[in-house]
Image (cartoon, rainbow, N blue to C red; front, side, top):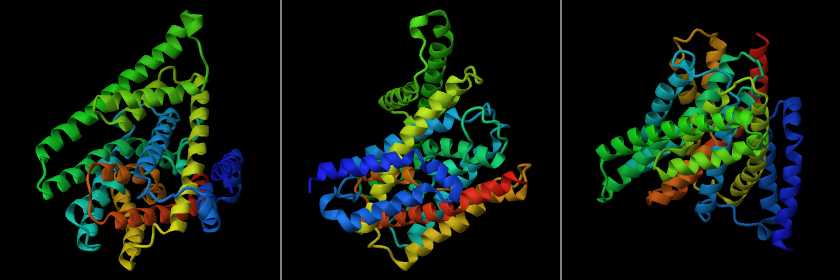
Length: 407
């Protein structure tokens, strides 16, 4: 059997199905992420000899760049669909989730990794860092709708904005794990340098570059195009082009590209906020994101079939369950204790700390920079946590959000 042709057929069928999956998910109340993971598992159980090896340990470069691509596309789409203009007061809920919940989740997961799972210090810090961010890719079921959708849901806004913010803000802690690893191994590394460069400079560079790029694109697309007909465009692909441009430029400047993409999207979104062109930009990024997502979920299902969970122990299963069902919900609820929203919304926001492609990216990125101990165990426990999240949140997101809407 020709492997290339088989892959083409599978991709064609999977991508074709994407067109109907959002509607099917809405009808059944089950996230389509579960479907694609199951398809990947079955395909690799039956046709593994004819398909590419899906294991991330053997394809870390491909894993790194595919997850990187889908996360930045998702961040652009996430920013474009947020109607609420930024201010510290209006965005207090997601800022508290990033500044309080995420940091406590990192610390608690790292402590459990070290004391409960028996990981080394560097690997434990890495575990906390990669599981920290709420995933923008797998969280569409609990996020706000398209631009100017008009839905006033604090829960959906908080989860959408949190997913956009914390994928970049979590990056310094991946670098912290790398720094700890370097110091523990006797190589060059400094906590002062980490804080000055990886925290202060990289975050600032991401914010500034993203803001300037978003403003520049807004002027080009909405102001100059009114005066110069040749500059007028309404192609949705501009959103993807902007994503790649701002991400690449920011990374060249050693800033955090994830932050830059989200800030760029928010800035562009609120440049002539009511303009219908934002709908096209969002629609195009959404389609590209779903295309990449079905591919990556099939690969993820393939890793499950090929043994990525083989190192799993009872303690790892307990860790994943406690992290998703206790640590994140409790810290999420506590962060919003002073916010004037209904307790059911507060509980829902805390519960839907979805983990996904961002965690895979951070893990692959860290492994590309330093040779951490417990390599296979980290892939196993992170994959198990993502699997649990896909199943638990994928089965509950639609009914819970519908229930909140009816209140």
